[in-house]
Image 1: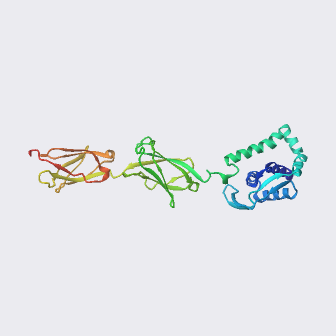
Image 2: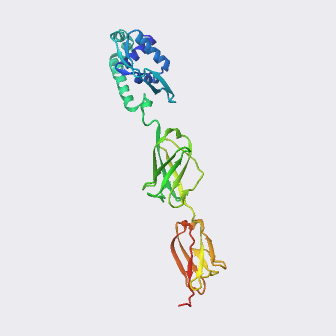
Image 3: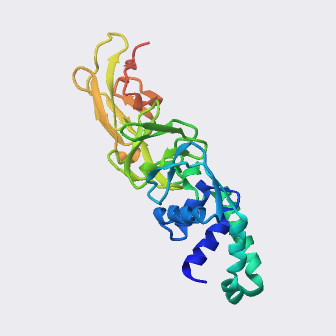
Length: 312
């Protein structure tokens, strides 16, 4: 059997009661180019080996891995092998007898059928019918500065992607994960910004970092609470309501003193920084004041009244 006969036998095996949209992609996968596949169909019809029933529909299909759109007239075509076509197959079986022996029937009829059924289900030959080819899924794992297990935002806030013309967001679950689904596949390989949306000033540690997106990717995003580097306020005399100078204001062993107007600002070392702080105010002749669990990330002035020790 020459090469042309093998091609004709192959396409006849594919054609019976199939639609044209199922044939051309399959032939492309087998090494045919689009024009050669169409020419071969025309040859088969001209020689009365197949009967093609045309409709007047025009549709778009994807014909290669780059998903180039091609308009094919008479796209919806039902193909059926004619009696002459069946005779042709029977008269050109010497090739199969020599090469395949007793397995020819399984391979000639069973394998193409299995491939067609598999391709229909998986979209292997028909990427234009696949719902998944145009979108990707991936997960962002949000964690604190102490490593991947530092889940400081369980069930809190959202992660969002800045896609320039589009903004996508996903809620952070109890495991610190934000999963994005059905993101356009066009972002694959692109470097995009990922940020946090939270009522408190949580932000990524690397604000200007870009992350490359791919299907099924796991992206680890380290975040921290900002605006916790200092506290400020005023210390006033409880009787006169005037500022008290030289009051020692401390967080653990970090401290500062109020000025002549009673104003203070304390810079907190990075290893002491946290969301809530305990602040101590003390001066000789005055009662010590302790303020606990102060939410300093709100950046509100922490003002206190202190009372002289000898005042009842």
